[in-house]
Length: 265
Image 1: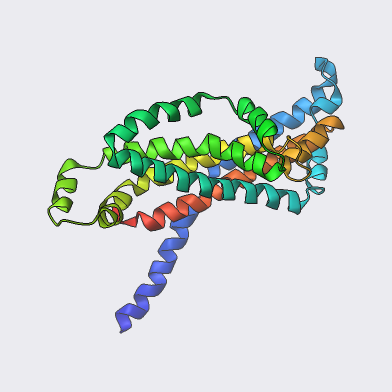
Image 2: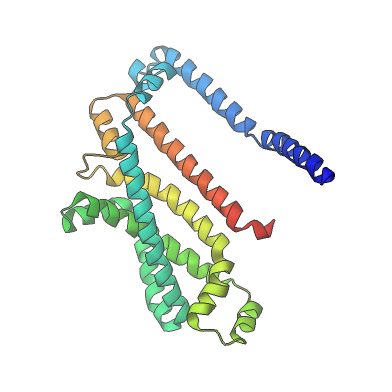
């Protein structure tokens, strides 16, 4: 028992310096340098022939941050997460079908490539013409942009699973559900998490554009209002909120990845 009593404090002390060492000082230094340069440009803007309101100082941006409405942030976040969940479910279903049937893949994969080539603006126009509800329009745009990403990445990861592992698993004569649950899903989990990171950054950018189409709530709507009022500081404030939101969700994804894939350590 005594050795255990002494081991616990040493472990906690070891974790403290390690956590401190992993603190992203370089990122803070980079942000601080950017902030200093930006503040300098805000003072030099008139001498450079740039309107003073076009490069607001940090003080004005901070003041605009105090007017951020949490409900708009929550609405945008809910739209992104709900659409990503739907996109992931649809993409995985399509990927499993293509993996199970070669003929199905031959017909469907070109269609997915076509969907991925369609610009976001075109999807927004289609949404305006096809749907009346704003939420359906936003969800439609996000799903059409993100679902093909999940489908293609999941299928490619399934194809990359070791042939020896597949043969060994089939020797036990599993059901299709067992084959998927016991082998494929654990094997492609790293690729799935990577797909979520890509789709998340994509959805954050797309949702602001989609919210411009008739939405009366959300960060995209607030950006539109700020543009109409020529309030550049508000535009920067809402943009900063989007960036922070993306970093927070990505941090949660990284923690989830570390926990789920701790067997790789």
